Amino acid sequence: MVELHEVSKLYRQGDRDVAALREVSLRVAPGEVFGVLGQSGAGKSTLIRCVNLLERPTSGTVRVDGKDMLSLDDRQLREARQGIGMIFQHFNLFASRTVEGNVAYPLEVAGWSRTLIRERVAELLALVGLSDRSKAYPSQLSGGQKQRVGIARALAPRPRLLLSDEATSALDPETTRSVLDLLRDINRKLGLTILLITHQMDVVKELCDSVAVLERGQLLEQGKVLDLLSRPGTRLHGLCYAPFAMREWPANPGRRLVELFLVGAHATRPVLTTMARRFDVDANLMEGTLDRVGGAPVGRLLFELTGEPEAVSRALDFLREQGLSPEERAHV
Image 1 (tube, helix red, strand yellow):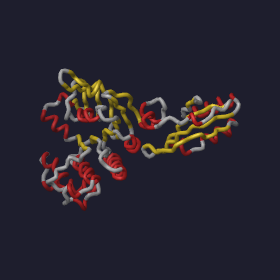
Image 2 (cartoon, rainbow, N blue to C red):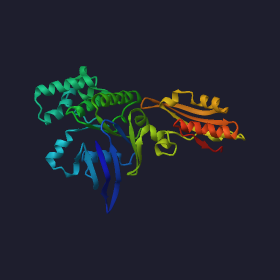
Image 3 (tube, helix red, strand yellow):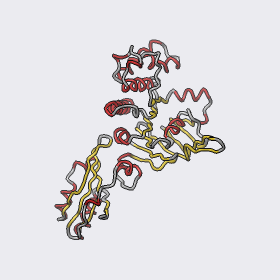
Image 4 (cartoon, rainbow, N blue to C red):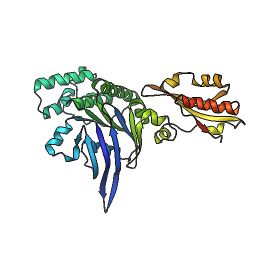
């Protein structure tokens, strides 16, 4: 649905060029929720604005739904943008228009008939749970309600791609969760591809199928969220999980300290108990967390493995055969 190839964006500051993006390449599959994670100044907003050419890249290629965006003339670009919806951090609603007026606006610009506009607006307000607020003005709405109006407006022309520019960062945690639930529901019901930028790790864990990590305009890594989180060497893992406090655990001769991730079905099965019984070893749990990522359980454990050296090695091989990646850690 979206393909960026070696996209760079330079801004002129005084007598020098400053790079907001440096040869960024990424691919967003149809129907997935793809997050771009990074702190302020990472280049996230520039990247998402390059997708619909609100910012034109200095170099590289941008393809959306099969179209080479940089090759389109003004008329073709306007048509292509009708297939791309966008929601914003600060809502960007018209204060002088009602809820239904805000949602209707892009359809009016596109030349829809009044009857079709009325039907589409009613359909969208029902989808986002605001049918009873159609006559209200933005000043009469909560932050979460304003963002729901923004989502309905973005969906009005039936886009195949929805861009989200820090859509939840101005909301409180409870409202954020309700908006994320709505976006996931829209993704599933409509098969809509969503490309979002965020600095919030919880948004990535709650909503995204795939993620790219951006720092100082450079793409550090991209992949499935669960895959990156479950590999200790990745940048996403480091951003999400603090190291275990191994200084608190004294070294015990003959014991091996192991860190293990249990994802999905593994997190609900007695993997360690099965291993201990089968190989006659002891697994002493030192520390652990249980989290949920995209609705899937994720367990992170630190344990000491004790037993005959050969039995311990076979036990670790057993974990690997189960598709797990036990990582041995040195006592500090």
